Image (tube, rainbow, N blue to C red; front, top):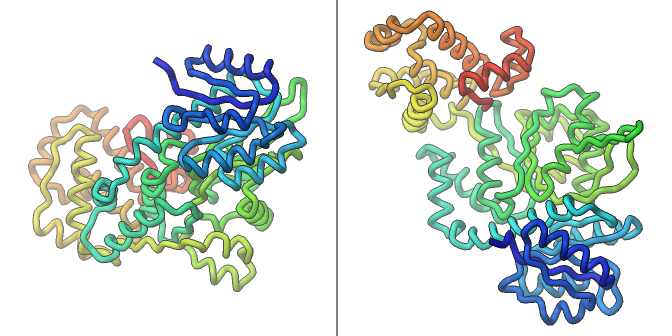
Length: 441
């Protein structure tokens, strides 16, 4: 079975033959053209999953072919091939809708990987015709944004609206309010859903390492080595940066430049690389106040605030606590393979009266402790009897898991903050999180 139908356009007949051989070996069905005008007339848009075209060709340039094809079929991914000197033109074409670009010369494996991404995107777009019908989208949003409060209704509307709009987003809300979950929901509803969603806590990585983490790094040597950054890895998808206010002034400047032209250079390199990435940034602070104090760049602020969403604290939506708590109990019971407890009226009244500085993360931690029978001395008798029969090793493991859950909640879901509270190396904590089936929130 073919992996997809690909049209390849280049005025060099030898390259057409080589590319057809490479891609057919990888399982694709390939048609080639050396005349871009004939290609424009003959490419079957209903059958073709991706088009790869050279940028500089006689008769019709690659960017002109891109524009003509997208005018007829907006969802058709067109990948441009260009020599190093053509990169500024390729960057402009990316802004005009090119799906990706390949710098000549390139290897067969890399070409096949880029082609596969383009074909997958095309197939996704076809699938989303049904998936993204209004009723289907609404159902997904209701399953993932739980509650009946007006604040949740507003968040659902914003998620649906932002999914179709290719703009960067700023999420403002306290730690633990579900900022990353909201960002992932918008991504999953968007045309980028099959491409990577990359999350990074700006406050958890030392400043000296953060630039390379975001933008990648080239190192000299024999042979030289290259490290791909998060923006490059997320190409075609979305990147979520929490605590964006923690970026240094120099990194704020780099991010502002990136948002202006969607290109970057790796550390130690001077090659400008275009990427197509949607940025969702999150902060728990008032960026406008930081702006007035000179602690946040004005150009970055205005680029981030095109679409701004407030994530309410749990104290602002206490009427949602019963539904949220029931959902977290069900999730925890499934994860820990324990019976699902039923909270009584007193439990719910007690929960509603709490202040919840850790927001949803703290409520989830309480639910997990409830399922584990570790509720600060007030567990029901049935739970205490069940725990009494457990082996010592399991009791110790469950107590350790409860401490990790509580530390994560206090740290707003950050493993770096939780590791500091527990006095553990972050790597050790991450191993324990994986062992107990927990997750950062």
